[in-house]
Amino acid sequence: MQQSPCDWDAFQNLAAAHTGDLAERQERLRRALVRGRPFSGVPARRYSWSEDIVQEIITAVVHVADELADLRLRESDGRGALWAATRGLQVAREAEQLWRQRFRAHALLGEERELEAATRSMEAILLDLGYAMEAETSDTLRLLQMAKR
Image (cartoon, rainbow, N blue to C red; front, top):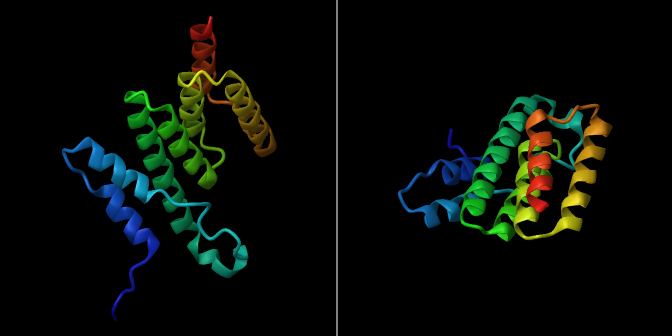
């Protein structure tokens, strides 16, 4: 039986390719990022068998988005970091590591209002989901506030 290639296969190949060239690695990670949550818009009961795969995809996308945002921040590219974090948050809005990257990007860009709005958005999502803010997120926000002074 011949297998048909799918987006998940393409994502895995792009994300796994390691080269010594940082620019090429960043481009591969950028192209690997997807839009939206897997199987969104499809009735859950129709693909109930896929829940494990969906969680695997979400975890991988969050990891790639976090890695790309981190690489972009190290190069002082706030816009690139913001793009990566936002793309990842489209897949997993509760992923606090991506919110932290988003906060750092806004701070790097000097976007205080956007940082405050992002903080409120994350807090609302966490409240809606019944989650408490991670200590690392609180620490990040506190450090960004201190750096602003």
